[in-house]
Image (cartoon, rainbow, N blue to C red; front, side, top):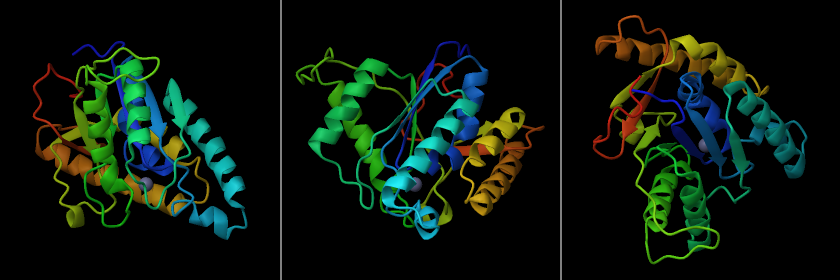
Length: 244
Ligand SMILES: [Zn+2]
């Protein structure tokens, strides 16, 4: 499969999700000459940024710190366009305005593949709704009779792959795809390190990548040392997308 120029779009609820859950696949896609864009819907100040608030930062300072770290991580990973939308988290609510905003982005970006959250996460109230949000926006983007300023109606549905929630078993997450990130693992490590006060979480996601490699080896990826797990939302009917 030729990934040259293929566009991957990541839609994450909070900044950290981009790092813990899919930064390996992002780095891999860029390495294979694909393009990656990312939308981070909120700054995560409702929960993910607790350690920054506890360290004495104001909410505004926490947002600025997250912006700094995320931009650095985006550069490490080679993300071509990284947007922080500053929507409210805890809890994220799907509205028509938000749906049309994402639909507009989809019509302009035209991603070939989308990575986003699994549809259930009992440990985070935002994660579970994002898949519905992305799916709804995709349907709106494809609506020929829906006019959104600055866009041409229509959108070719892109396959969605869900990245792993923190606790897979409690959320019914069943991987259907393992992405071998062995040769880009240092990019994932460096990207996760940009969140300087989350070292233990970064370490746990490195362990997770090692564990998922055990799974990947069981299914034929013999030399895999690090992997990320994904679950396909739609039946895979297109030619080889996201199989590497
Ligand atoms: Zn999150």
